[in-house]
Length: 204
Image 1 (spheres, rainbow, N blue to C red):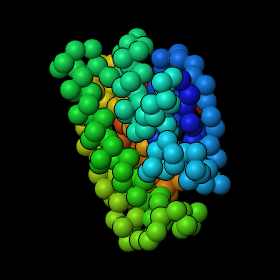
Image 2 (cartoon, rainbow, N blue to C red):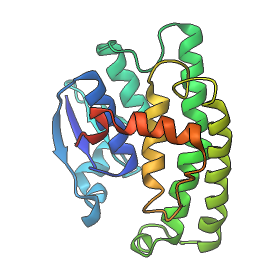
Image 3 (cartoon, helix red, strand yellow):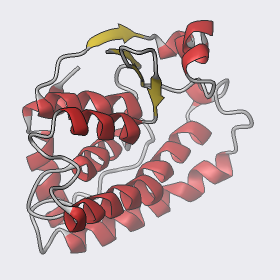
Image 4 (spheres, helix red, strand yellow):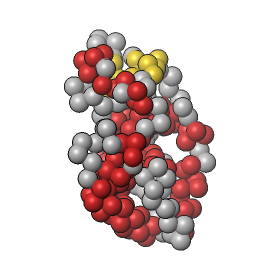
């Protein structure tokens, strides 16, 4: 297998953290997204959406979309389980990961892509009003998450899962998106301190 990796961008980083938690070592092909390497002919041939990461299997199959890649890797390397341990648990993990993606990560990404000057050539058209509208959306979801985390250690239950990976990376992405972390949300901050202190959070 070979992983076309986009470095610290949120979706490539989700797979990087997942790999680190699993202790999996895969050949990496670094792609310089700052120089639009993800729009190269090679990457476009693997993923016509020109997005990273892309996992190329030994038979030539190209898998894109972070969660799809993680799901494939979980099948090959089931321990430790990061996508659930049975039908009920897998559904709960999927539910929370999807909520985090749709209501938090997507809002942070919209704020970044539509307001940051560095994204002017990437996001066409760049709609500043849409970026600004997403900042309170992201913070509203964190208010909800803080209440949920009053009852459990991690987002989807008592075990660390892909939902925690997605949410941690979204919190980290708030800084370049120019959204202040809500330090007053004590349960959220307790959770964030715990997950960002894991060795996998520093994986590159």
